[in-house]
Length: 251
Length: 200
Image (cartoon, each protein chain N blue to C red):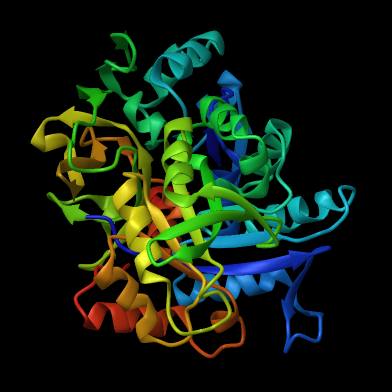
């Protein structure tokens, strides 16, 4: 059977890894290629670059990052952020990414999922979804980094993504993101039950046991975290060791 | 020099990157003379079988590939592995390179997600030089919806995904095929590529 995946995510702006630190704004904290290489050594199953470069002209920089990373990191690479057209998808894959992730743009233009899947294959189209609870078992989809409530039902949206040809859903809970109290299990469970495609848990990992918890309580395929790995509070290796000790199959 | 056949099907740069990283000389090529002068040949490929076979035929390399695969180490990767078989039923019945006995058909696993995508564990089936130095827990990266149906004697490793999925196959002489992507399979994949490069 497939191993559960542990995925570190790197936020990149203008070619540098950035992190919001103590709400004081964004700080540059490193070279993405080096960070990706370090995660690779720790046993990351996949690496996600999330490009938050503001200007469209700056887009080329993330492609250079992917090109350089692909020379020394031999696990799948995913790029998200700023991908709005089929041409963006093509450029990103050509630079060496194995998958792309679309979020707000897919909500605004769902055809992008279908076009991407038809041309490049479902396996390289991941849809990132930001959602927030409106009642205990109901969530709506947000765009623009969690700022705009689209008032679209989460479950309807992920089913639609699957129908359009998405190969994977990366589900980020706005409620648990940054709180560090663990992944949003009820939301995760609801989405995993609604679709057949793999679901990546995102938002909320704060301690070692949170990853195994998501795999034990839901059938999610992967778990993603950024700060936790970035600030070296945990290594990918430690997370995998914890999962393994609880009988979860990891690489 | 390892010739990486460049016939317009798939991300050949990741294979080239992996060989560069290992310090192994390689060349992306669509020239017959490069295949003839190479020490070994890698046939990559992603996409659909008929389209890839069309491109390979259009490149005029089919006869050279068939002939060279009997003379020097040859590795097909992913769709490149599937092309090694006699035929495929992807969209239509289509003849392959016929370097290994068997055929390619759709994976049917009602309870599982297809494509089979992610890290799966290698289970060994007999001796294979490409698997030298492998441990008991080696995971490799797969992305595919079709799989090979082949003889046990041609199967060196498989993984479990509902049923057995051939992972590494060969003709017992020079020809090998990996359904997984060694160039995306971390240390395990790099070791397999290194083992391949050492064959002669």
